[in-house]
Image 1 (cartoon, helix red, strand yellow):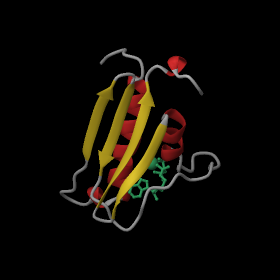
Image 2: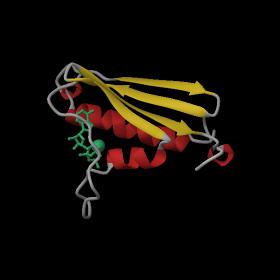
Image 3: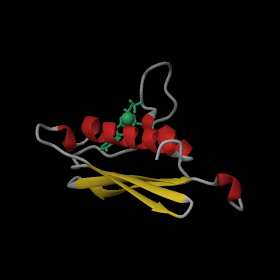
Image 4: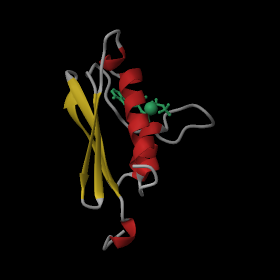
Length: 108
Ligand SMILES: Nc1ncnc2c1ncn2[C@@H]1O[C@H](COP(=O)(O)OP(=O)(O)OP(=O)(O)O)[C@@H](O)[C@H]1O
Ligand SMILES: [Mg+2]
């Protein structure tokens, strides 16, 4: 993928979502796992990370002072054309759609 448009944003989003899966879901237990999916569809890239669920659920936090954290999902929301969460305590997918050609979009 190298320097394809959107690669850096895609890497950043996957990195944030995978880190969240390990930090905040049951995927972070010993032997836990998470699954990354990427689907290219024309000018759009669908990115998803499936975790192993747990009591907490993903929610973007309001802007935090300094280095307090709580920025991952806000960053994802800012980069993505759309994003969302599906699933429950048995497992959740946090997904984001990246628009690779935003200049071509009719309405921004
Ligand atoms: N996969 C997940 N499963 C359960 N809870 C989640 C998941 N991802 C995020 N969360 C919850 O949503 C909150 C916000 O996530 P976000 O990535 O924005 O911040 P953070 O991970 O706490 O900090 P940062 O990403 O800046 O290091 C988390 O603190 C956590 O409570
Ligand atoms: Mg995070």
